[in-house]
Image (cartoon, rainbow, N blue to C red; front, side, top):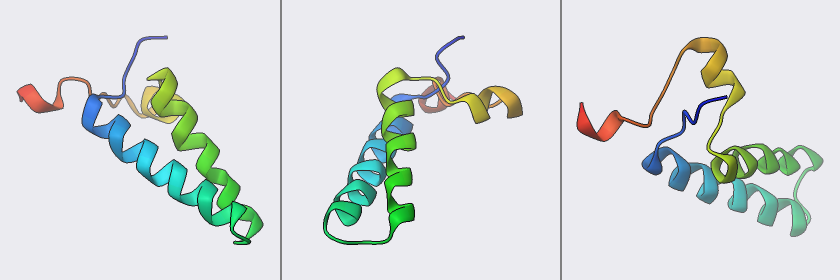
Length: 63
């Protein structure tokens, strides 16, 4: 699979993922553990949903 998550997108995913995981650790709802998904996709650089939809944010800054 090709990398399809750009740098700005990665930063947003890391922030959202860490915030959700932090909320879950602080006693938030069980569904807050979904923060693992954006965190993992930001670290790998590949979003399977983007692949299905044909999206790519890697070149977003240059357009």
